[in-house]
Length: 380
Image (tube, helix red, strand yellow):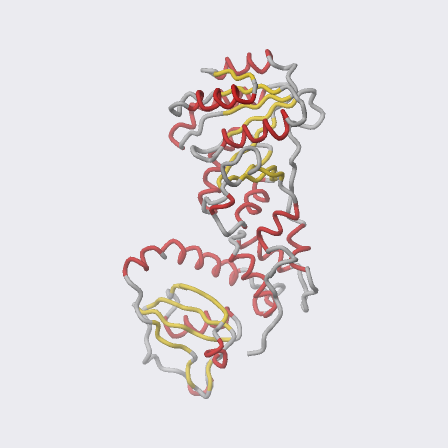
């Protein structure tokens, strides 16, 4: 098993060259724009891991392979990586291979130009580097035409963005908002921040309800916040008690419901709670609270796990703990529900802001006023 770099004027051609030499089972380790010192070999460099067969016969009638120079293969052997580093990269290798496989599979007669067009290949890479779902990135780039006008990628991506920072369901006489999500996602902190920003600051009558009797001292934490803020707080042991409390406090302007964070094996215990929230009239605005720092695959798994609550919106926390924000938009699109709020940091209530189309685009592509990724072609 060895690592080797291959160069070509497109990522796809470099991959084809690598598989020709190392075999169809070769794994993609990394892909990048070639450095200045290697630019004469090709505009892109891919690092591939495979068994290889440097002595494999070549058909002289075919002439030099693409990505070669003067008949010489544009590749170089990469020094072996430490075993621990290879272990850390296994999951990343799998993701990159899946992305590559999907890209190549979709490069049919009607979309082949997307795969081999330099401008759009760069746009596609920028989106997938932000960890936007590969097929969503393909959908966005596939609708573009070259040459790309300024802001074209941003405009195309904006059509996927849905936001809704209004608390409560539209048309409901009272605002009932519930926070559901995995353990440690930041539901209680988000609840308190919402109470201050959209309850007390607006002079609304606010009531806390919590069914979180699983986590040690969870109820006491919320009671402490309620005492400081002068807000009523009631701890409820059962889903039936929650249903009664929702009726009891229906005259409140804003009812905020905290729920326990449950792992997969405990989800059956939440079935009654989910039914109460779904059946309450005039309706509960249920926000699924997810850490933005969670990997895309884990976000998908947790979202499926909490689908029992029929969430109406997504609230993302821990934005300060990640640098890739594509999974935020990917989850929203896949679930068909808008993003409501972003939370980062521990300050109450400052570290919470309503989501907007502009903020999501800035997270994924960068602010237009800053060094936003460029998609122009640089000559090899």
